[in-house]
Length: 361
Image (tube, rainbow, N blue to C red; front, side):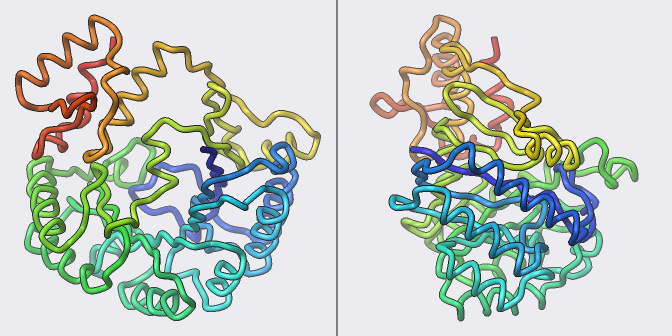
């Protein structure tokens, strides 16, 4: 299986919690960037893809012409005959009927919409540029165009957000009957506006919100297939699931990370430099690491444990240290063994980081 990830590092403005690589959108600069993406794609011409994911940043901030030019390239340069999933991330403030129609016409079959909150007060606090009504209108438009595989992103544990607020948010979002829900706790990262302002979060409040989400969404027909993701049956994110299965994927774009031929790599995190390197026919990668068997096993454990129902094969616990840690975790009933598969015991998935760190040698 082979995926393709394309990074669009443009936004209208930086959200106050965001530490992803992105800059303010300028149309002429974005034109140059799209041309570089197209030229970069020639390095992988005719590769057969199972999935495509265009993320950011805010891909929907591109103009209709830029989106169509990029999608036309993907359809032309790659072998999509076995394509299963083609995801495009969007924000409701920069999405139009014209853009949605272009996406539909060029084989995009899944949308991921950044909602984050149903409360306009909290959206403003987060530095988001849309409101809840914007989201509702775009969601309806997407349905009208024919998209029936839509994922919604929500954030919990926001400052001034109570458990009652979160419960009301989930009940509201449930009414959209989306295919997938991605729920993430607010994390305060360095070099963000929230970090500079000294904003703090409560792990206890976030844990209560997470526990409620697990119970509430499962009661309402969502499959909790990954630590932060719930889906209707058969609508689990194929592209992202293959990340967690430690499968390979091509990375195109400044700051994009890929995994190909046992090498994990990252493209230069500077748009001007990226464009310059690609236009000169040079390699845009600035970080590259060979994944030997030992590292492959650790990464397979770390990623695979995120898949709560699928788990990770016991074959990756292939040294005495891993086996001892695994035995302790099973004895403590944090992890369970189901035939030859290791999974989190129900109710312990919130401790993911703590448990995975035990396997670091």
